[in-house]
Image (cartoon, rainbow, N blue to C red; front, side, top):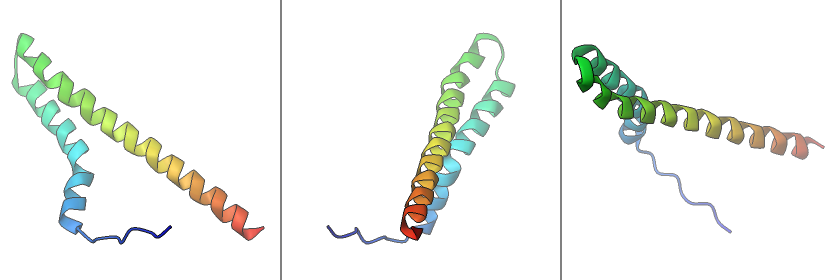
Length: 76
């Protein structure tokens, strides 16, 4: 099995890294600007942005744990 070639897309990667925090920031700005029942419209963006951050963190931890275990297995 061969590995897929890695393409460098720094601009796209940078935008993807910032997408969840910017979504949360946008939701917070909307929460501050709107009044009453209109504020509820910002909640889905806030929840989705938070979920993306949590999912990213969990994925990163699993990947790091797998790399550490592979490194420990290779050293034996």
